[in-house]
Image (cartoon, rainbow, N blue to C red; front, side, top):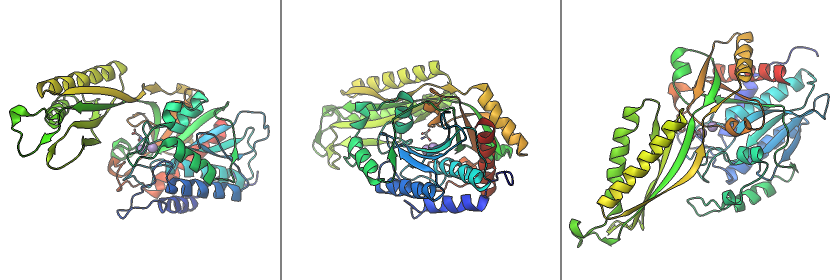
Length: 412
Ligand code: HGY
Ligand code: MN
Ligand code: MN
């Protein structure tokens, strides 16, 4: 080994800029939703960058994309480093991409220094982490952990009427240079670098977060059915207006869930009226409810509150409410040895570090079901994410990548 492997901060910044250009929005954000042409373009660029360094490029049936750098013993299960390339519709330049590109930077640093690791190290870009275009999220990492794709997932429809299975097939076909590999398989461990997507590290001026766990997430869809009617001729007493029930429900939920429990999170991010005509009382109103909590019992209690509130408001408006669960991820705690791996690596690199829970879900949640996993957080400006203004200082991106490299050397 000539000189010890080192991250090249400039190369990482160039890569972040190149990927941010794929799906760039006018407000300096990124709209590169799962399994779109933009996602395929980003996957192709990642494959090209990996091929250029001699890393083997492969993909599995869930379109998870892998770059493999061989180690001394090919029979040993690989160490996996990665995150996701898909973004929110008004996403940022770092959510997901930082973790994938820092993982690539680690592989290149090992190659630059001629380091031979005992086992192979692989970069992975998981398919459809966000779950925004196709619900639910973490499609690729769930399929990897389960070793199968649930057919129900393939029938998910996007708001523009596309079917996930069809977009998946087109995405796989678009990357002809990637060898197909079986779904799942044994890995030695998984490391994911990600922006915190919250304000804590920046506020406390700490460079690295050693993530101890991920809070629980549950996505509900509430459909309230009433009776379509003429907007002009129908007096209130003759209406069975689902929008009245939806408005009463949201007023109650926003007034009683988060204000009464500082660890609770409740978000209605999507609401639509059918048929959606200006001058017709809607027949149905459908809305999403994203609830989060570190305590699974509280998650259940909040779900029960949501169901009860919507059913009561619907009945009061002469309507009917139905609730279905789109996504359900119980809270997870990472193995303490993996959290310590991150803490020790950051400390060896001279970075300040603190333990913390993730408010956002991540692919590591599912990969942790099949291998020891750890997450590394870095600060993002004002804790902003899922917003085009998302921003990360280059020194923080470099510190996160250096910590990832240090962890990989210790874990490989
Ligand atoms: O929604 C989440 O928690 C993740 O950032 N997609
Ligand atoms: Mn993410
Ligand atoms: Mn996200």
